[in-house]
Length: 240
Length: 342
Image (cartoon, rainbow over all chains, first blue to last red; front, side, top):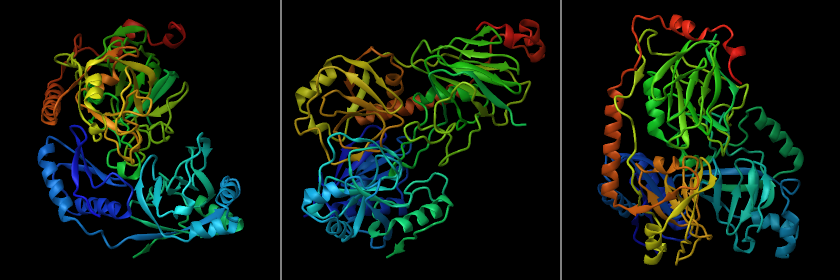
């Protein structure tokens, strides 16, 4: 099902192009396709685009283009843009399950009536898509979590969850990018850093990327931790 | 040796800020930067800095400083400024020499004041800017507020040593009016009764405020379509309403996406004015359309550019008086640090 995109007001320096008001992979692909299109052939006065699950926030300079003109141009572009971009990146994310970062692994398996091994198998089976980066620098919201694993967030967030922790919140998965409070349920962690301001590419992932989790043991994780700490790139994405 | 600024006594919330770090919202990083951009621009212009130079932003008392080399400074906001024990006016530039104390009071006309120093603060740029983002610990001095004992490196001043000290030709005072708001992305999640309430009832500036958001207290605003939305992008100045029905206005360090409905967005020209309101003050909102708000913003930018292009020599500035001698005669550099009032 497709819906016609519409423009929502967002102040005197921003507009929102909304495709739908639900989480839907096809809708999200259209959002990202519009962002890509605007990056490749920009509209004068357009400053910045923020792709999210189901809409694109667009910032503009009213001294260069007025909101009313930009609305028309954006709608035209959004309607013409029906196909998702075909090229994307796939990240094979090494993940160690359980341990200090995987606080909820066993409880969640018990809640779902699964063995830990089966929970891990279910979690690593799909190819996830980065629906958006938001909330914190480089924080990746992943779509594609199997329905059997959908789990509400904790009623009371934990005070501190480390960067690299991988968890479930509602119908999504995530990779924590910076340490901080979180109400997500965490299954494990990756030595990868989604955000490092010192790195040439500070942000590892972007909306539209694909992600696969590949289980590793603790010894491998510690070896990769050391490599990351030394500034070594441990994973390059496949370009497809 | 690189000239530097040393914090002798830190104010409660002083950070390094430049114009901010735009272009990274898609990566989850809000721009940060000043809560009152016009004041930062004025402070930089008064000391001959480029508009993208970094300065100090402070809320509450601005703190006490010394410098390692002669500099020119300007404090912006109605702030008590003393240099070497002598009171000097804010809103214009002054010389400060090593051995003199520079002391800044709290802004009397708002919350956020600025201190610019010729050459700018030369902390290492992070992701292309020096602005501190406290919530994520990025930029500025180790991503945090300044503390007593900190030393901040200064850049090389471009202003010539003998150049006149500068002031504004006329004061920069925002208009007195209700805070103008535009419809937000989820304006239609709120019915006419909720909109009437926002636009007719008083809301109060809550003490729960920081560089990320300004909470407001007042009659409950109910979203008839619910207070949870699929997260979307959060423009600066969004009036977001969580389930409590108490609105909050998203500021420089906001989260880049959010799951609460954004009922309205504060007009860009009025957002610094809201940020400058003291805690407890009553806010009244009025609605404007986008064309009007854009016109106001364009007019304000032009007025500010005109003001900054027409800076005039500061009162009392004499081109033939050696500045250092002047300072020495009046204050006596020696003993200033030991003899000054605590």
